[in-house]
Length: 342
Image 1 (tube, one colour):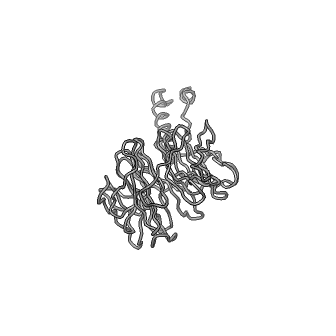
Image 2 (cartoon, rainbow, N blue to C red):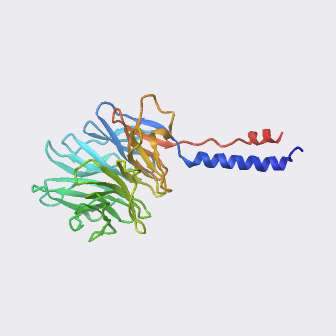
Image 3 (cartoon, rainbow, N blue to C red):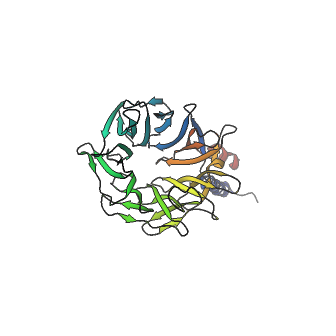
């Protein structure tokens, strides 16, 4: 007996939904090169508008697909290094004022401003800026100590008491993550903060990023400045510190977005590649998820991910910067349904 058109339609829709679910199970990306030429370094910072900070040949560039490269300039010493960007396109970092001394800077609307440093410091550096324009960083002193600071448009540069800790990232609600006493720490505001603990078998943990839900990511090593072995971790209030490595393989996590996608790198069975951890806990090899990739290009460490899922990092062979943009997966056409009904 020939099935009814309604039955065929129902079966077709079920098949399409199944295929769509399978396609969405693992995201795919399109590759964009951000190579400034010889001396290019990885792209580590991206905002939600797809603007990327790239350091190359002692210069910092703002890059976008439509605008290309914009050189931020310097404070007189010829060298600049960018370490953070917000959704307004404001960039922070350090720029040399002479051949030996660098100061924290804020770049906006084509102009670079010297933020100075704490009294007595010999060098200063700004490491993060949120969308409200609040900047955090640190001043270095001749005894090799570091004191954190906070800068706002109203109060300018002020000391920030983290009770011996150093913060690397600040988000819009003022929460900060960083390190203290060989452990990753979370601060809701300047003050005592919260010790996120350590991973079993490792003596040092460092927080790299935090999302609006309070999920923190970073990595653990045997000791500070020891590269291997190393494991990525995630921390939440309810779940505590969780090891993200699979089968004991080395990995590091550097960035997380508000949807809970985490980026970094991991040793896979046959290679070390950029890594993506999904909100469901799956670890994916980014190199295998890129479509239309040029021959010879292998996706290395992933350092940042924005709220649209754009990912930035470095190419393995050259160390040059890349951006990965989520690919639009094809949807079944209405014509395919009509063919099934004929």
